[in-house]
Length: 578
Image (cartoon, rainbow, N blue to C red; front, side, top):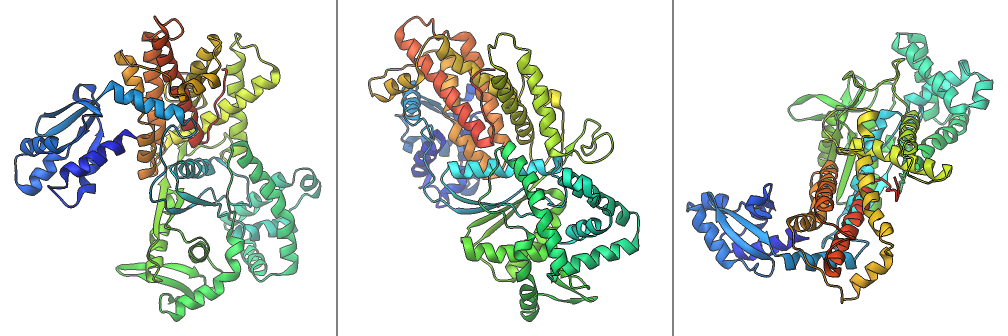
């Protein structure tokens, strides 16, 4: 990766100015304007401030000690002390060939010091169908996991299901009092959802008798009442099959699915231990953990003896640390749970847990085109299965409208499935995760702009060059790897595309740094645009000679491979024809 190479060279050059080299290396970045070269180092100004010296003088001294002649054809000081670097075409060709020789990883090395991550994401409430609100956690967690693994980190994924507690007290009460047996036999998930909503609505409307009955059923379940456990064990497979079918549709797999029920047997001892250690104490009959400067505690046991989400999360931390030895634990939930995780992380410190980094990766809300949380016309939250169905339906119309594609009905539906689901995922990931975004099928399925459909089309367009030229892409790659392959970059469009291809690893690292997959989607969009310019200006199959043709085919193949791998990391499949 070019940025890492430059940082390594600059590290030596600035070591005479400061011991804290790493802080300044982060100030080396790709230029936003090609007039200022390919990369720009903004190191001299902060060093000058620290040393009370002239920044241009420091920049000149850094350049005098910087060994980049093999990489850069020019290194210049500009403005107040910016260092502008322009890469050599021969260096770009060398790196392109290295990337082509490693088609699986595109020449991107594994990190030298891999860390152990646990990524806690998705976590739906099993008592009701997954809805649009679960989309962001699920696709964000998957993309972050894929990127971390690609760079060489060890990642364990855990789907912390809501499969216990009050929601199942509602299900059990509804099962005993409102179940339509015929409907349950035909469509168990729909009937369980109906009775859950019915009970939920009665409680929300202030029915104290039903509320008390639900709490009683919940307490009996927690106390291992045989009848309540029987109902729980009966309905759980129906709920899990429904959830697993959605994960399968969008290509999501977890290493572990340890829900609240898994940790329940541990909770009483954990609460007692926290009381004994003076970390938790009684408050109005409940048990809570207080924090300095804050009168609001984190409750871990209610007056009636019931445990809470926080209690389960503490148990999960203790189990994960013992079982998996993580360096970092990431939690992906919406911003409304920020206070909960802020308190949870404080509790971990009070318990003496060290050497583990905790991070809440929070995100905004999916909105309808009215600017309000995305709902159906009836006012209920949009189900995720229905959302995927609708996306595939819209995509099918797009695919069928292309009369030039000679495809079977099975192929058409398979392509539509990849496009529809890909567009749902990409539309979410292309947003700043902390922002709300407006859900629109028309926008996300557009064939231009920053959409999955555009990316998938760009990939298919590149691949079509090889089929049009009757070129065996595998044989072409073998020729590249042979060591006898020659390539050159002459035009600006070729060089700009080459530079963009070689930024792939840097884009992944940037996206990982703050767990923002939208930085990777932005890179892929820019790559597709650079390719479009190249395609318009640089004939490939009708190039003036064989050397130029092969050089441009190399750029085409690497563009396609990068788009394919980038979309794969985001959890999106490509199509060969579209």
